[in-house]
Image (cartoon, rainbow, N blue to C red):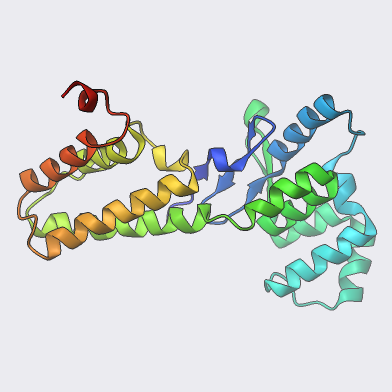
Length: 240
């Protein structure tokens, strides 16, 4: 996937705060994490904690070193990294490596970091956050987002082979079948399960075109309309 969009999936929600994640870099918003922690703190009486303090704890600096070196972000030895982190501060080191960045201005200003470091911070903030983020490690949100993007390209190529030039109506039709509505950027708001359904539908439609079951633009649109009509919860289905 070439485009780096910001995802706001319900699968990345903590205490009512949707944690933003970039689809290509996989970086996650530390600003949203801090906001979620403050909500949890109000609800459960947690102690005050700041993310920069968590990052600068010696034991977490050690953990960050192994996260970075295992992903080839750094080549230096452990002692060199720890000495640099101790003298400059972990945050400054991470900024220099390009895995920690503050972007935007005013109300849109937010701090982002590499996803494994984000997970480490969340786990260190509170045991309840630890449990929630461990479960995120098992989900398929980003994987399904990439597959849905790749399958849409495959579907578009198949549509082109039967003379379709305007793909926007098909993008909208896919949304209606999977989500029951349409708006721009819906897949960036989708759950992992919805993205899987979308990827499967794109693959099914592309296959049907390649095998000759769908031979025209009208055939393709009618197939999607039929699936939308049969979608559970469709008000027109119950009225039929």
